[in-house]
Amino acid sequence: MIQVKVFDCEHEKDLEEEMNDFLSNLDARKFVDIKYHIAMLSDEDEQIFCFSGMILYRK
Image (cartoon, rainbow, N blue to C red; front, top):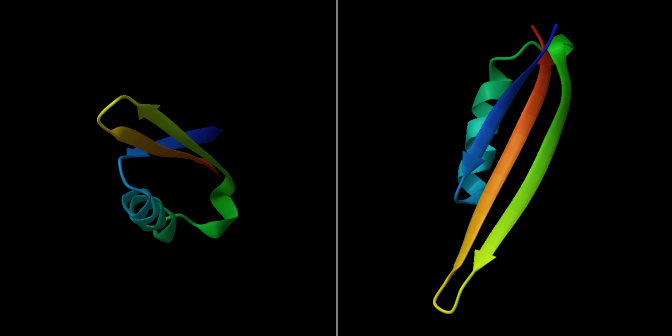
């Protein structure tokens, strides 16, 4: 069965760390794919970034 683990962070380095932590405990033979997305919201005062990733793996 294919499973997903979703990560969502405000900073790119935080996302990297969280995903690497998860992958370090995952048997490499169970890894399937990684999806990555960046979203940005901008108004007059600030820009807000959302970095998200999804790891597909076999359970």
